[in-house]
Picture 1: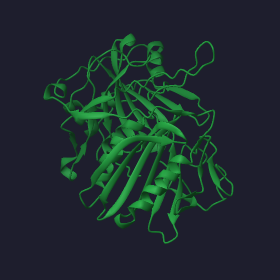
Picture 2: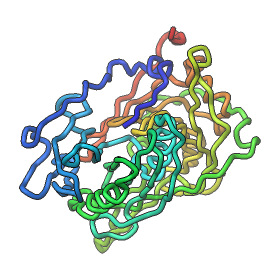
Picture 3: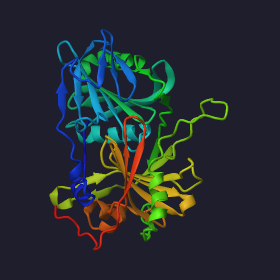
Length: 385
């Protein structure tokens, strides 16, 4: 999974303490967090399983991407007998699990990571685990000079699942059949059932949507700050709920399905530069009980995103910094920040806006933990990068 990041923001938000462990490859049968049988493999934390054989691909082992003991970010790996076709199932627990956003972010990453111009052949919702329209599937051609690639995205409980299969263009049928088999062979557990994948429609933003500045609001008293942090515990991609009769009634995602893409936020011009995609939504009523998402800055294709949520009941626009396993509450505004303000935040010149007010940690068993952080006695300085 391509992991784009902005070093200035990482340093500013003090994320070095959360440095991830080096990926650890594990041969079949050696990872206690994956249960294996002759025909299936199962992620213990996520309570879901996958087929051991998918078309011409066979399971070859797992890889732990998170720190030892967390198991909130791991993969199952597949290969064809001649190792020319590769498949990977990513199972991870991001602060905001949203297949539509993950699909968009991966499209950006695939184009950036390919030495040849990639073409998206088709994008649609497909069945997963014998359930209709439970996954977004994107098929590409000419990936990395002549490869065929397919990507699929789905959500189960608060877990995000991303599947990639890549091989030579001449073997497109094998790539497609492997993806078909992986999607059809998923089995969801009762604890984390499949949810609406929330596909997105993305158009270009009008200039007036990206240029209006917002004002940073002063922090509220500690008891009110706790209410702000509580918003970060909600599953922004849509929550599973039941009615008074025990029937399932899923609550919607706070992310609108129609978004626009700004002209892009440019960061780090002195070191070659990077363009950060910024998605925006039109103002409107809250889609979920916690509010409405009005901005998402895509920092990686693995769930590292900045989100601005209009929390109408709090009369402010809260900025959340999502990563795998956590969400950080940053500053609050009286409106949606402009592209210029997002660029300054990422460049490290808006240290007060980026200061962490609270950390919300996610655990594999579905719990959330909130830690409120006191304001520093002196304003932090911008990092040297």
